[in-house]
Image (tube, rainbow over all chains, first blue to last red; front, top):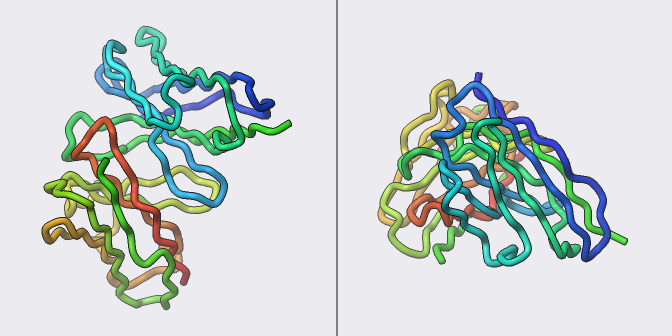
Length: 120
Length: 107
């Protein structure tokens, strides 16, 4: 069974930093790009960042560009999201996602989600 | 950026009803569209890809279609467990994907 298990998150003060991690199992981790998607309280889904299967290419939503850094460790099957200069607008549930190989598919594996609360 | 507009944002229906959710794209995204179901406190569940292909294990009462830049998700014979919020996602501009605003289905 394919799984993504997330860790990290929690309460952080405005301007602070936090790291989220996500470990994959049941599939060849290094063959898939990985993404982070977030959901603010009572709101819809927002794509945040993506990293290619090799880790060479990274992409960010404008709302987090310059503040968040995505990285991966293929030998250990993990992807991380390093978040800096956090604001209240970053408060959300963050999901890691196994990206599809082609545009003709979708996200078939999601992490369980981890809460990030930015508050003083 | 490609925008996805879902309608309605909320709908109430009864068990056994047929319901339709619409997702309109701001430009041509071909059939690069997926649908997800999300229940409170849970991660999204993958339902449909390529606009109309049912993901393995998804009940056949779910179906999707495309007409130009308008996409629909139909649930034929609504069941109590279908109470959830449904999202469309465009992958035409992958990896810069976007989601629709969501449709909450109340039974």
